[in-house]
Image (cartoon, rainbow, N blue to C red; front, top):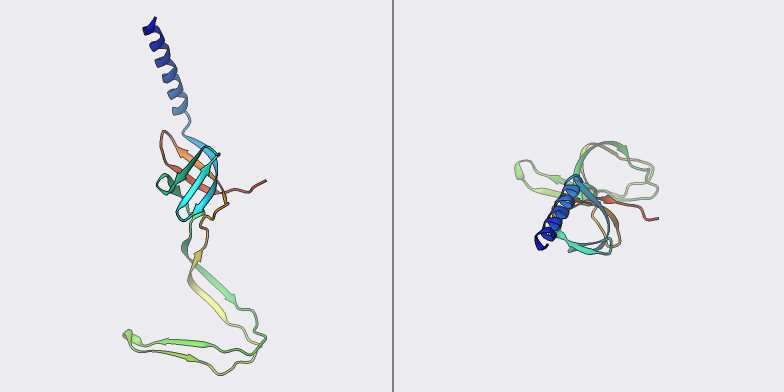
Length: 147
């Protein structure tokens, strides 16, 4: 009888493992408890730390290059311009301030520029996570809206 019970348990475990193997990922919802160090509470069952989390670009700060062709808004008040001139071949630098400029002009902002996207998680953010199959790592996909 003891062997039959062991066989039944083994069959149940094999069936459970087969069901889990057919699910490539599991979806969870969580809330950021702290940003530094990053800790995420998952469905009030567990708290994940940085070592268990894989962050997508959707939830991190990152730099990107963009091409722009803008004009600033027209100045309405008197103002100064700071000018920084770097000498060629690492020569001297010169920092100057212009004479007061009256309003009524704009500035072109054009070309390829580097910008920082501030997307890092903050305490209280609701997130969606995917658990790697049979793994201890969770991919933080994105923030989600709260109802």
